Length: 561
Image 1 (cartoon, helix red, strand yellow):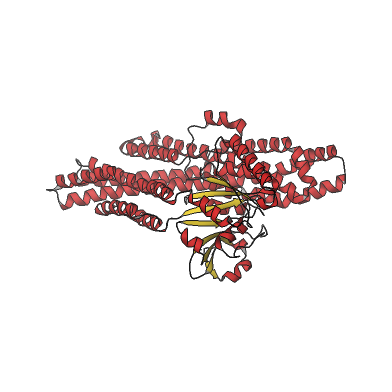
Image 2 (cartoon, rainbow, N blue to C red):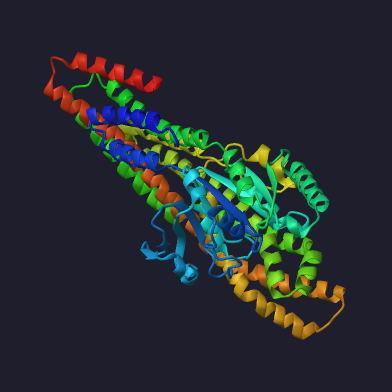
C-alpha cells in the first residue's frame, strides 16, 4: 500500500497557512489536491496495435474472460481494471453520464458513446496490485483519432506504458515506433511486451526480442524493459505482474504529488511575499493596490480576448502553408510505400496515409502552439507600453510586467519536447529552445484538433481509391505510382488545405482561454493576500509587527517543507 500520510500532512499544513490569510482560491485547490492524493494510483496502460493480444493478456491477469478480445475498431474503448468484491462496470459517457452494467453486459456497451470504462472485478491479482490501475486501450493504428484521444486522458496520471507487439510479425511496426516517439515526450516509463511467443520456437522468439531491443536502442539511444510471453504460457500473469512491480508505485506517487504540492506551495509563498512587502502601506494604499490589480486583470483579460480574435494572421497562414508543404513532400517521398499499401486494399492504404501525415500535424501543431503562446505574451507586453494610457499605466506597469514575466516562467515550466524526425533534430534543438507552452500537454490539444481533417481523409480516401481503380484497372506499378502522385496526393493535400483552418483556430482559442484563466487565478490569489493584510491592519494596528513576524515564520516553514 502507498504511504500517503506524509504528503497529506504537508497539504494540511499548507492549507492551514492559506486559511490563516484567507487565500480562498488556494484553499479550494488544496482540497482538490487532497482528494487526488487519497485516490492516487499508478496507471499501467496496455497499448499496441489491434489484435496484438492486450485484452487476452489482461484476462489472464484477471483470471477470467472479461475483456472482449478482437473488438471492432469503431467500438473499442479504454477499460480501467479495479479490484472489488462487488463486480460490475461503470461506463463514463461522452456527455458526462455514468451508466452501470453487469459484467455479462460488457460486449453490449456501445463504445462510440463512451470515454472510458471502469471495470470492478473480484480478482486476487488486482487486489494484490491495488496501487496500480491496469488499463486496456484500443489499438492505436486504426486511423480513428478517437482512440488516441482516449490515451490522452492518462498523460498526467502517473502513467506507465506497456507496448504489446505481436511476435509473429518479428518487429515493431513504423506506426508503433511513431507512437513510442510521441509518448516518450511525456513519459520515460515504457516497457515492451512481445506477445504470442508460442506462435514461434523459443529460439525464434529470442531472435525477435534481440532484434527489437537493438532497434529501440538505435532509435531512442536507451534500453527498454522487454518481456516475452503469450496468453497460453503457464506463468504469463506472474511475469506481467513482476514487470509491473519494477515500476515502483511509491516512487511515482511521491514524484507526482510532490510536484503538484510544490506548485501550490510556491503560489502561497508568492502571496506571503506580497503581504510582507506591503508592511509600509496603510489601508488606503492597500485598497488602491487591490484596485490597481483588478484594473490590470481586466485590461489583460480584455487584451487576451482581443488578441484571440486577431492572433497573427501572418503566423497562421505561414504555419498552414508549411504544414501543406511538408505533407505534400512526405506523401510524395512515401509513394513506394503508398503503392504497396494500395495493393493491400483501402484500409491498408488509409492507415499508411494517416501514418505519414499524423506525425507532421502533431509536430507542426506543437510548433504553432509554442509560437502562438509567445505571440500572446508579446502582445500583452506591447499593451503595457501603450503611450495613450501612459499616465494610468504608470501606476500599474510594475504589476503588468510582473504578471507577464510569471506567464513566461509558467510556459517554460510547462514545456514539452515535440516529437521530431531525426533529420530535424539539430534544427529543432537550435531554433526552438525558447518556446513556451500554456497547456500542460500540447499533445492533448493537437490530438483533439487534428482529428477533423484526418477523419475527413478517412471518409474521402475510398472515393479516391475507387476513382483510381476505375481509371487504371490492373495497371503496372509505375502507372499506379504516377496516379498516386498525380491524382491521389493532390486531392488529399487539397482537402487538408480546406480543413486546417479550424484546428489552428481551436488551438488559438484554447490557448487564449488558458492564458486568461492563469491571469485571473494569479491575480485573484495576490488580491486575496492583500485583502488579508488590509483586514489585519484595520483589526490590529498596534500588533501589526507581530503579524509580520508570523508571516515570516510561515514563509520559512513553507520554504523548508
